[in-house]
Image (tube, rainbow, N blue to C red; front, side, top):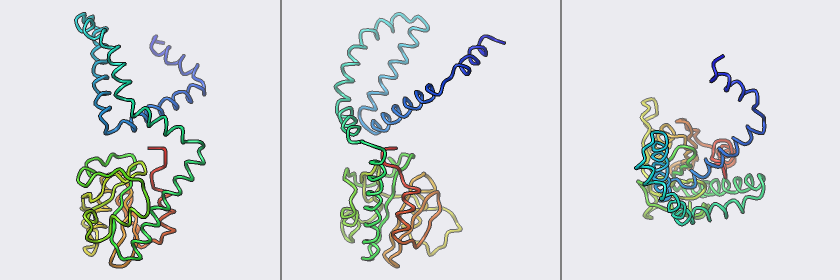
Length: 260
């Protein structure tokens, strides 16, 4: 057996369940760090750091003495700069971790936030106010967020209802939720292109289908015409659902608190 295959076989033989747990924990940790840094200035710093790390690797592998001579004194500077620049993100992460007591706490908080969305939709439907709410999951909705007005607000039923009140500046377009915060309002979404969709389908419903065709987001539509609530996911829309069904579907399809 070739030496390479022998080493692989030995690794597989020696692999323990503790190693699987170790890899899983480290993977989740790095995933959470990347989510935390996404769309921040610190991410640009991280990209620069990784580029220098790549250059240092090339310098060592190919004996590029000038590159090594230039980069070696910079590591101390970069470490100090990292500590300073990443200070807000590190502090926010530590506070965030400190608030996470138990897994059940996740479930209770998640259920509360779904109730906020459900209550807002119920009130909007009763008042005949149209609305379009998008929940980001794994796919980044940055492109669509940038078409609206930036926000950074806590998710509450009262604020959601207020945004969609007619003749207010942000009532047209969609509200986008990311990691359980309202990050933008008045956002423009792509319309569904499926020719089989009924011509009677309104613009909001087409936009809900369109965004869920192009991404893995979940979209909720409230119709002012018939006071109905609909939910779209995976390019399919479930029309005329009541508030209890909406809450159940959000629990099934919606993003999970603390999981990105």
